[in-house]
Image (cartoon, rainbow, N blue to C red; front, side, top):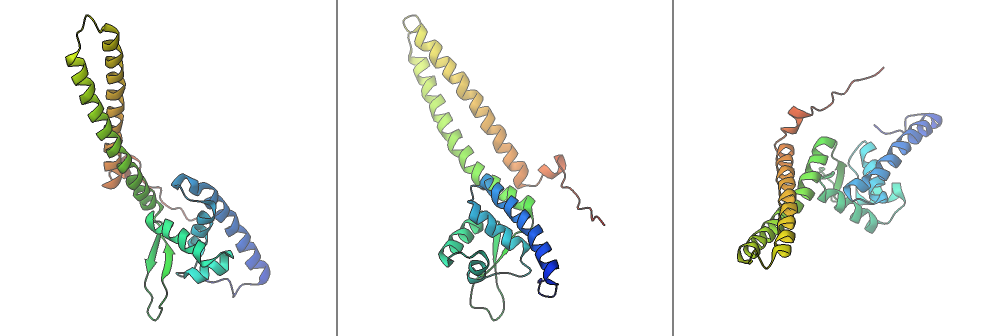
Length: 191
């Protein structure tokens, strides 16, 4: 619902409250690797009463269509915003994804799965190489080198164990098993 039907003082109060929330959202979007202005864009869409075009967003935020396009593309990639269709509209329309649990899960899974796979691959290759070096060493002549290699291997095995755990954590988020361990909060309407 738009604010047009409210009295000017009521509009100002609602806008002031919304602005405070939008500022907080914008400041904290760096957790998602998002700029402050893109965070403010997300906040704008969060309070929008209907899907918005890039032109609508640009007018509201007093920013160029190019800036809006870049911000929206970032939010689309992070699955924080959805492109929607509207009968009779030739322009793309966007609305915020209101399921913040899903937004966080998508972001976490997208970013961390890639890092985990890359790091596990590197660790496994390095451990194999260390194992070959250790096998080929003359234990008497190279005791100091053997000690260094064994310590490095121990550290890499600890890192590998961590990434295997993180991979399982990602799985629990992806299949929503995480909500059995940490249930979603129920929304309590306050009067």
